[in-house]
Length: 161
Image (cartoon, rainbow, N blue to C red; front, side, top):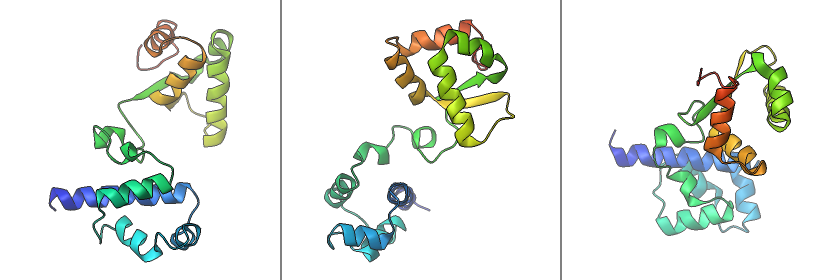
């Protein structure tokens, strides 16, 4: 398959993911947009059966209230939100949860919430997105690199052992 077709398919899949994240069917998009976005047209964009201009794509993304940049990551293989594993993941050693709770109660609470959401109570490792830890670092008024360094020094991170 040629690159343009592969890229159109990838963008279409992202459009579908974004629409579904908002809990919208194709018919609901048409109804809520007062017919501006026809269900058949949006479906054809999502299947990459029909090309979408940059202007229309920009308008659709604005309607979805989503930045265009989400569709065009710097490295689609690593940065795509649909990928489950990424180079920007941080892996916690859950065997150290007790110590983590004493030193970093906010991170420990966040990890507990993620474990409960995922229903993964038996694991020894937990993978979190780098972006999650960046937010935690900001809330703690510490830089992300400094937080990662501290967590690594205290052996809370599996990948830094």
